[in-house]
Length: 117
Image (cartoon, rainbow, N blue to C red; front, side):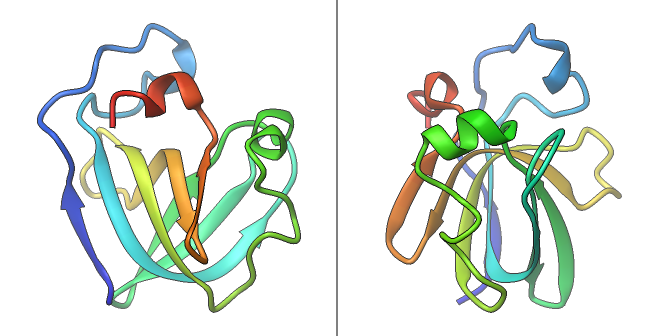
């Protein structure tokens, strides 16, 4: 089942410049992986949510791999849930994931932030 929802009301403010383009509240999407790029500066997963493609940015490759998510973890066509912070531009279907769930496995690519989910 695909869909999207806002999770929680407000997450703590993040001072790191890498989050300056995102909203503060957690956001969740569920869909099917349409494409995966695993490389620098951030792995990217394109997710088809009811016909709309969402760009899901993960942590840099080192922390993403440390979380257990590697190039072999997921494939095009797999169902995915991504939880994180969406773009401040609501016309942009882009988010920075804190946690992703694929095949029943949970990957906290930003574990310090994932504690607040």
